[in-house]
Image 1 (tube, rainbow, N blue to C red):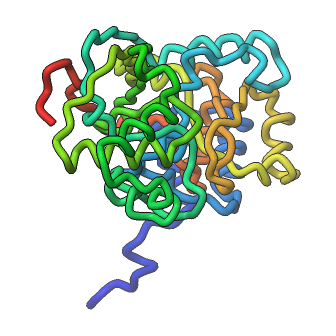
Image 2: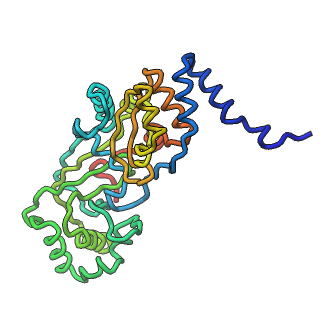
Image 3: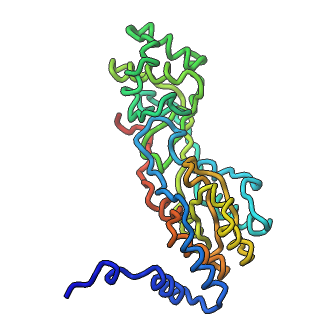
Length: 304
């Protein structure tokens, strides 16, 4: 005799009951919050993984957590927001390092965003676009002209600003915001022709801090919520009726997961709400952060 699929798969009710038992939710209110939250239906989507893209702003904007303003978080209680703010600012570290001679051919990233929806994995693919071809670099003279346009003080050997992020792999990004097509075309030409072009550079290194992630994980549920959730009476009622301590932050660009919701695990009702939302399908941001690439950083002298 074979069991039907419905008989083999545990029902949502039994899953909630087992979860409540594991969390030791003995009170009626937390158990009810867990059950109601787990039955919420929102258009949750998985958080996007960083793509091999030359554009800095196409990646997760986690660098903003370093200098996150206190007023960036919203929520009803100032003390709750202050604790959440402190935990978030410990997620990312920033270190700057000066390089007297930095080979510009090792740069393979730009600030800003593409004008189209395409993903460009290298300067070479970007340099092949009509926008970059307009630069027309066919000689060394054209090359120096293009670099002087992108870097107006190139001949004076002014320090160039670069940046890097552990969640974006080993790519090194030029921090300039202007003349990105000209800069990319010039670097692609230098690689193709083997031109040794070096400038002083300040490289700012953003890195996810494992200890900060673990501390946040111990204290909070951090969930990605769609903006539409705040117009849903059932969801808002769970927060207000249970007097749940929470903080929210707009950080992600995905419209379906546009806000981070931080719920304190030390508060029994907030913990129940967080567990229920995960059952409902809300992406776990801490799991997402742990899955982002952790890489060996670039150091001066690394081969091209």
